[in-house]
Image 1: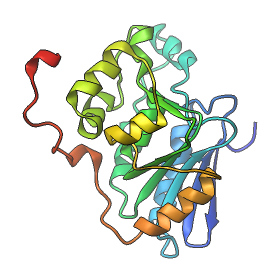
Image 2: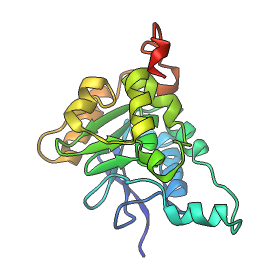
Image 3: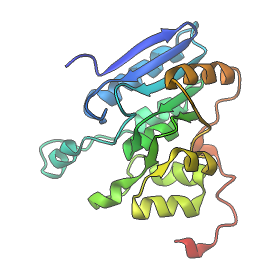
Image 4: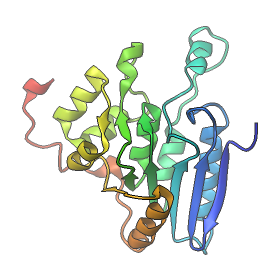
Amino acid sequence: MGELVKLTHWEDIAVVTIDNPPVNALSPGVPEGILDSIKASANDPAVKAIVVIGAGSTFIAGADIREFQKVTSGEKARVTLHPMLLAIEDSPKPVIMAIHGQALGGGLELAMAGHYRVIAPAAQVGQPEVKLGIIPGAGGTQRLPRLAGIAKAVEMCAFGEPIPAREALALGIVDRVIEGDLLTGAVAFAREVADRPAPKTRERNEKLAAVDPAVF
């Protein structure tokens, strides 16, 4: 297998490409590669913003279920994605997640750690962990309510059904639907927001107020 995460540049925009076929799962080596690429780009004075995208037909369709089995069997210790997610969110340069295909489970949790999200029209996002008998374990229960609102976040985490791109846009999970080539559109969007503040999802509280407790 070749390099799982590739770092390239479109002039002043760094492009981090996840290339772990068939579904770009967050297998060992992928989170580490993303973290290294984010840190290198953040420290590169020539880089104004960072785009994260998946190779092939999808963004990230989730974690690697084989790794869960190794943890539950005691074969290996539990690994957390939080250091990578915090490094993305704390990047001094805007990180734009470019979603096509599916961003599910850990894939959506990674995307929500970015400062902005753009999406292809046919893409879907979701937190389907409940269908495996688990809950989102990498910040999904914390970041999703801040983007989509508590009621929708509860629904998505409790039932596990993905939602389409246009609904994700209407809810505030993503910031723009990109028609045409996703990478080209994402790079253009990155240049558009390069000089703006980089909003941290974990600090967004505007959708957490005045919630009916009945939604739980």
